[in-house]
Amino acid sequence: MDDTRDLLILGGGLVGMTLALTAARKGISSHVVDRADPADLTAEGFDGRASAISTASWNLFTNIGIADRLEPHGSPISAIAVSDQLKPGEITFKPEPHEGSLGRMFANRTLRLALFQAASEEPLIAWHSKANITERNRGEHGVSVTLESGRVLHGALMIAAEGRGSPTREDAGIVTAHWDYSHRAIIAGLTHEKPHQNVAWEIFYPAGPFALLPMLDLPDGTHRSALVWTVDEKDAAGTLKLSDRAFLAEVEKRMGGIFGDIASVGPRSSYPLGFHHTVKITSNRLALIGDAAHGIHPIAGQGLNLGLRDVGALVDVLADGMRLGLEPGDAQLLAKYERWRGLDSFSVALATDGLTRLFGVPGKTASAVRRFGMAGVQRLPVLKDWFMDEARGVSGDMPDLLKA
Image 1 (cartoon, rainbow, N blue to C red):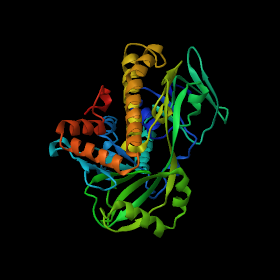
Image 2: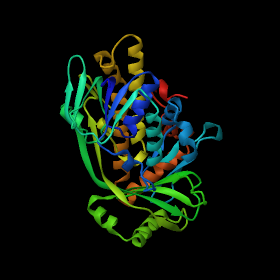
Image 3: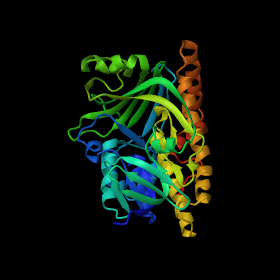
Image 4: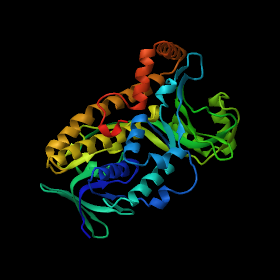
C-alpha cells in the first residue's frame, strides 16, 4: 500500500473529517489519523451534545455532498431570542421568510455518522482510527508520522486538527495566548411540554449564559432541546451530582416556563471553558485548523463554524495552488492561508470574549444597561441584519466553498 498522500491530517473529529472530505472533492488525497474509536463516537442515544450549523457551513456541506444525508435530521433555527435573566428588553433575531433560517441544529452523533459514511466511500481518504502517534517529522521535502504500530505515513502537508490540546501544535512550539474563564458548560438533552418553535434561546445570568437549542422532535412528537448551561467552576461538581429531579427543578427555574414543564433530562456531561488563540496558524509544512488554532466561548455557538471556515479557506488555497503546479506544503500557500484566516478567527474570538465579559457583569445597573442596549438593537434593522449575517457566517471574505 502506498503510504504517501497529499495531506497528513492529525485528528479525525468533525473539523478534521470535514477537511478530508472537502479536500477529496478537489482531488486532494489525505491520511486521517485519530486516537478515537469511531464506534464510541457514533454510539446510540442523544446526550445533548449538539452543534449549530450556520448558513455558510451548510453551504459547505452542500458543496461536498453530505447535506442530503443530514437534511432529515436537522432542526432549523428560525429565530434567536436573547434575554438578560428573562427581564423586559429581550431581543429577537428573526430573518424574513425569503432569507431562510439562521442555521440548523444537529446532534453531534448525526454529523459524525454522515461524515464517517461519506469518508468510507471516498478512495482519496485513508482513515486510521485507534492510532497513537509516536513521532512527527516535518522536513524540507515532506512530512511524516510514525504510528505506535511502527507504520510510517507520509504527506506533503501536516494539518493539526486535534482540538484544544493539540500535541502537534505543542510539538511545533507555536505560542498560544490563553486564559481560563473559571466556568464549566453543563450539557444535557431535554424533553419538554411545549414546542420550541425552532427558536434558540440565549438567557444570560450573572454566572453565565443558559442556552436552549432547538432539536428535531422525536417520531412520537416529543419536543426536544439541547441545554448548554454555564456555571461557576466551584459550583459545577455539585450541580452535576444533583439528582435528576433536583437538576430538572434548577433548569425549570431558569427557563421561566417558556417550554412548559420539563418531562425529562438526559445524561449530563461538562467541559471547562477557556479562551485560546495561537500567535500564528502555520509553520513549516504545518497548518492549524479548528480548536487547534482557536478556542472560544460557546456563547455564540460559533466554535465549529469557525473551524469549518478554516476548512473552506485552506482547501480553496491548496486547490488553487495545486492547479498552478505548487505542492500542498508550499510556503506561499501557507502564507496565504495565514493572512486569510488569522485576522478573521481572532476577531470572532475577541467578540465572543467581549460578550462573555459584558453579560457576566453582576448588578442591577449593569443589567439595565445591557437591556437598554438590546432594546436599541431591536429597533435598528441595520444592526440586526449585521448580527444575523454574523450568525449565518456570510460576512467578510468567504471561501468559495462556503458560498451557495
